[in-house]
Amino acid sequence: MVEWMQSLRSLGNNAVHAVGSVAKADARDALDLAEAILDYVYVFAQKFKEFEARRTAQSERRAAAVAVPSETRSSASEVAAEESTQSQNSRP
Image (cartoon, rainbow, N blue to C red; front, top):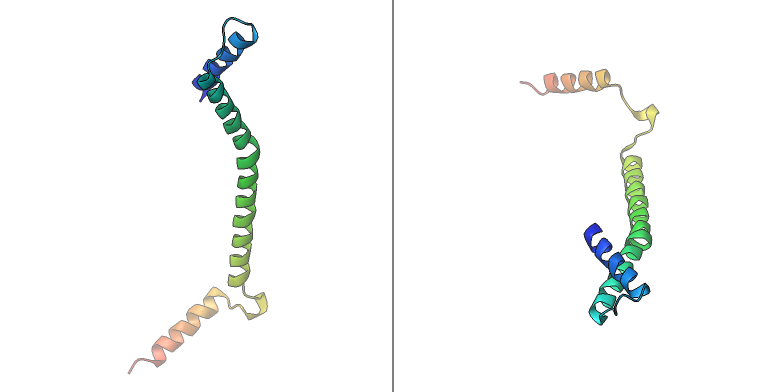
């Protein structure tokens, strides 16, 4: 892209300083590059912000769905003890 920009900059300099005329195809390429840069700077930057906001909201919703109030949560040792008791009670 940088090489393209350098070539088109040179083309623009030639046109401005009357070194020669600019072909219609070259002018179209210059316009295409300008549009691509504007899309990147303004359109894609906004789309990325929207993407990030959406991902953050999704992560927060997942975290909220998984979270259990602390008063109903058992400690790891309590859970292990309960599982051990259940395992022993189910043996013949």
